[in-house]
Length: 332
Image (cartoon, rainbow, N blue to C red; front, side):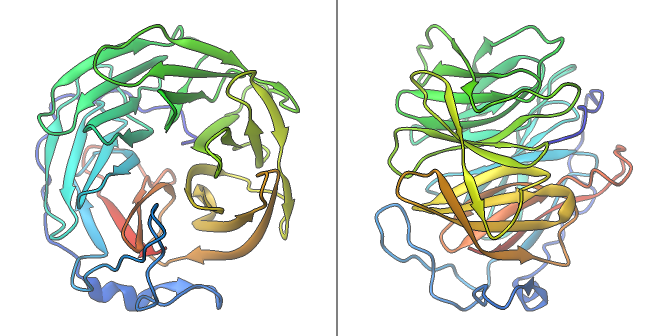
């Protein structure tokens, strides 16, 4: 995400509008000529097998009014988890119906931005103000809170899972944080970024993060000025990824990767740029872009079967308790 987090809004109530906006909205997708139609063959999952989505599942659904969403996470089951910048709550949506409920209510002063769901049901949450939280996605219980950095001068923004750690970005400092996965916790490791990385003052730098295709490194998007980096998690050495087909990924926010295909959500441009990574993940070639008339500053993406789901953060609209918010799905 890119804006300064909104002040907390405690005591959120369930959404005032819960109507599901049906799957017919797929017909309104405005994809580039190379993007697959809604009925195209499904993208492969991690095993390489193709998986299809039932066409009657909604492709747009409402979030609670005033939720101020930014992050979204989906695991192996058809449930999406969306965090709140207003109060740090987590909202769980059934993708089959578009209906949802508050899983974790958050609290005064809490923020939830980047999210990642582990196979054991633990949800890792970037808390913006120098903290990371771990929440049980089945019960909504807060498992633990990790203090990553002081709140001042830091912005814990996004998270991915690699090896035995959850890796968190800091948009205001040239450092990544490694938190041991699991319920028992452990020491947090701060990894300074070196090599090609140059930290820019007074802007958001590191934002979205995913693992490399070989599972040995991390890909980090630098929102300003719009660059991708391959980071060695052992040393922190960052190698700038050469972009072919476009000069930058300005406003790059959330990242999602399937094999060597990297999706970059460019929030204020209302698009997803799709890149093909080379074997070493040091060159990325633009293959297509995905746009949609329902995009309203989408920030991050998560995948279920052959769809990408994105939350509309609506940064250019009033961020008020009565502001409406949605999540939308497009073919992967």
